[in-house]
Length: 425
Ligand SMILES: Cc1ncc(COP(=O)(O)O)c(C=O)c1O
Image 1 (cartoon, rainbow, N blue to C red):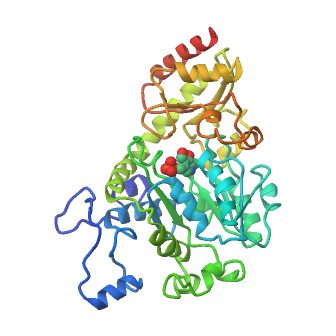
Image 2: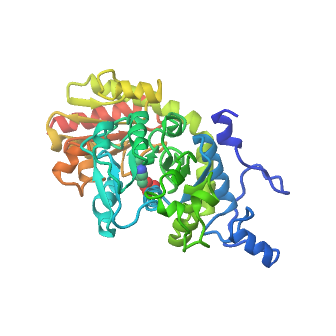
Image 3: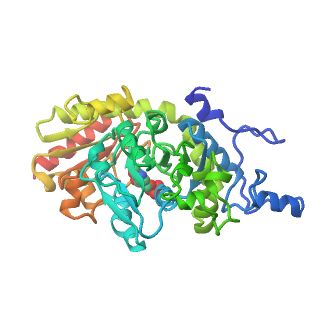
């Protein structure tokens, strides 16, 4: 099936009620038929549900649908995108290990890497920039993964994923790619060498600013058992789960099986069935929402670029954008609907535009049907030092837009009046 069809019908077989919409299985547990059945399910010998911290039938449809859309072998949904970020890396890391990351990251991901993981004895080695050579230079024998956002939020940089995967794989290290901004409709990271894909489902996939969620998808391609010294957690018997050797006992789905049985089972950041249901509603219409997001973003970006009050516009769709060529290579003719701009008058003028908009919502989200505006330096990335901001591709005067689905003329009119107020000081 094509992606548009998968997003609506994928991985759902109605039960005896023949319900057309995926039902919300609002239950904590599922009854075992007998002790043998209980044992077989709990040891993962037979597929099934037992306790909803670990899996749930509604959540399962969402997991399978996104697995199919990304082209992976299995997925695990969690309660937020940040839970997906943290569990995806903790699945591989122990104290003394390191994670290599690009510097252009969503603010909370950056904070988690820069300030939380180090307290657990994990070093996060930020590359000087997002180029494959810079990333390769940070990898050593204690590196357990390379982390990147396929399209950075809010920097808008596009990773040369094939080249990054090449340098990581050459050193026996997997690549974890956050594909939130691009979505699987624009970019499929597994096709370019990523080993694990994560999403904040809160954004474009949910699409309506109502529901937090995240997902970790396993590409099933990384040869853990070929690197037994580096990935002891994958090849040695796991005392926290029946002595399982993930890379051997679950060779095809080792990463996601470990994620569920160790990460989710023990930390409990589960996605509720109701939230999975809402996210499934969003996913059904993603294919038709995205082109409207894109068309509106092109219109808004063109307006801003031609306005003398605006000093710069960073939009992937413009040929002078430094990532335009990489964008063409990885996203084809698609463009994400986040963009940034600065106005003459610097930070104060940028904040004035932020303060003066009437239709754009001032808040910390993206991918909503509603158009949103943020000032990253004072909101999502306010904890970063000036040097770290620069490394993350954020300037103090930068304003970020997530362009929604309204009529573009109304959005332009709103920005026009906000720019007028800002220009008047
Ligand atoms: C690229 C990216 N990854 C992860 C997250 C975290 O997602 P959540 O807010 O669902 O925890 C965000 C949030 O904005 C994001 O933009």
